[in-house]
Image (tube, rainbow, N blue to C red; front, side, top):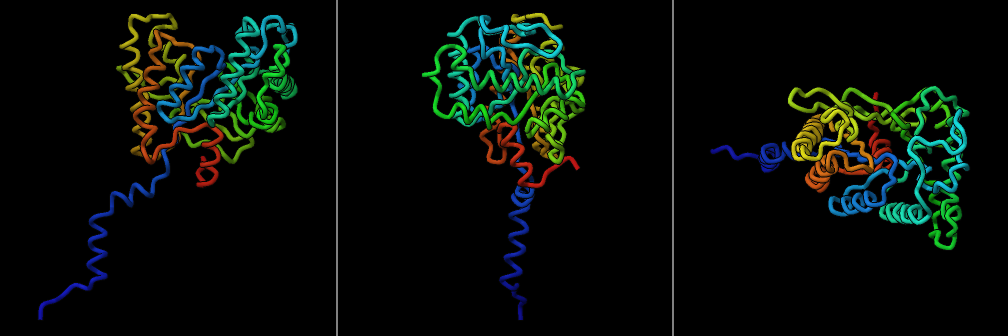
Length: 328
């Protein structure tokens, strides 16, 4: 009598043949991609970033510098630790109209699900600041954001919900020059920040979500013909590729090099451990906009994938905590 396979056993065999790739993919966590912008001042770049987000489906984190929430006329209202009143390494907004446009962009971004974080105010190196000095800087940032519409004389234009956003939505910080110290982390915890994004790691690393605040480190990624590592940030690529000198005639070359580096860093994680990939930018189109062009090409390619999430830092932190993924 011929042997007939048990239907249950036959189904198991067919499933084992047909599903290993899907099963393997299903066991992998989402690939998180985090894109941030330091300073977030130039209004033209605000508009460009929001269009990029709409095109790619990405959500961004904007680390705001509070001196751009006040004009030169109000500069004496700001005093950085150890500096004279009105001092700022990045200046102030030129006038109230410029501030009003920026505030409108901030609100549009907030309403669209993007995140506002803090980059302090005057962009000073606070590596040696004490916790109390950092706390004074954070207090001034909070005040500048809460009173921004009144400061420019247009309180009637303040959107409903602005005060709630200013009071409760600033959860993350990135230090100017990525200069962090013990005083910073103590002050961040005391001030209620949930994460910091000021440190640097050799490559993509699991965020330290069990620390208070959680720590996200910008990675060093291989770049260029010799694949030397560089911080995954547009300014660092600018310095690496053109010695910090604007060379727009070589835009195509620098764009291709940067895109190659971004894609390689992404694919290494996407095909491997799925560690979050962080990319940092500024509101400055360096080398003819090479780095923003490379970023947009990357995001258009990867953010639409079913197992990729291009998210804000706070969104990433929630996902990591929910999944139990940490740096252990």
